[in-house]
Length: 353
Image (cartoon, rainbow, N blue to C red):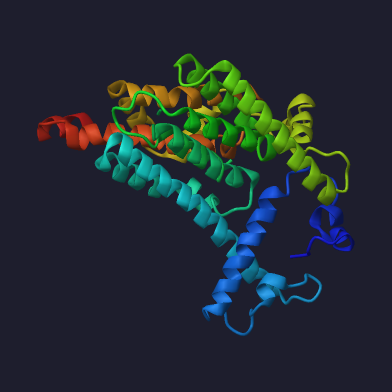
């Protein structure tokens, strides 16, 4: 909205209201460009009328009326919500391929019944940018194993888009999944590293990749991602060198400043936030884990991830939002057994009640 020229940087919010913990501009730059394309196409198709016109993509903050800025913000959120929706659609296709069509539709129904994820996935938080790559990761590995919100979903897609009886993913799928999670942790949300580590160890222990390959993919992706983040974010924050996620980790975790926003007991994620995020999906997910060894493998890394985050004093539901699609897959598997696989209707009713 302000442009990239150095003389416009002083108008950015972090300059007008200094003191914010640095976060990356990479997601905002990509989203801004996509929004400009969408707005331009809308103008050409006549979907945007005279009051907005091309100003919606080239408006200056100094001269733009309030309604134009509000319209631009709505388009931005629409684009981000669409990206995250695509990630969830890819996940449904992966679930259909891995567990069957009934399970995939139950997964979709569970996702649509949960408020927080759908409401917040259009918000321009780093967690929502991180969600799509993660989903893609899971789907790639399932296509052959089992992207903070945008990126984690892509990683999930990479891992879980594969045939029901497939014993292992391809090496390429594993490499893509690991690279997506490393990029997400380095650029968007450092807590994703707590999800990356158990996933990588699980892939290695199960023989889906080798330790040298994991190290190579991780190092190459990390160095490239750090260089990209430092180059872009140092310019926009006017600090050199600046790696936002490292600074945020230092400030929030090492110095413990995040505790100033509230301290919660260790059980908060399992006892409060996850039940709110998932509604009734947790008991169904436990049932799915009992019934299917693939679900037990799927839930191992997310469970360790939440346990790791539980050691930190400050807790928020958005820190664990990345695991919602995985728990919904497990819950959908449990629901399928209750309503499809159990042969006797009376038994299904008795178990549900």
